[in-house]
Image (cartoon, rainbow, N blue to C red; front, side, top):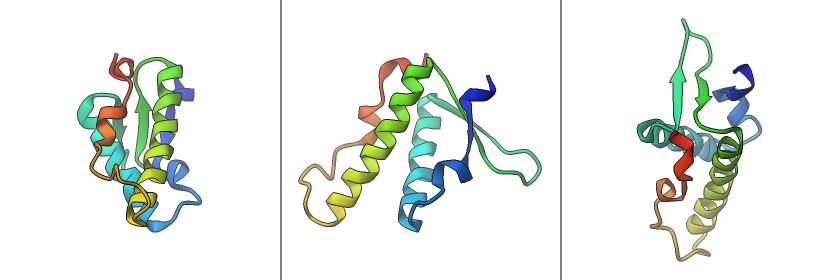
Length: 96
């Protein structure tokens, strides 16, 4: 479905450089888990195809934002859970 394909510029729009890097790294982890597919056609933007249900995809995007917020708090020293893996927080049905 076209409604389940996002591009990297859309996912990173309006974010700081550090957040854009964090989004990219999180996407690589999700790719390794099989939760998403990544494609790039002849110099175009990287396209992210979400697997699983739309509800699971929405949860992944929500978790991505939550992880970025948690990482920002950890960098500021306000969060003691800085070592928690964001991969562990991806819902199991995402790669289904």
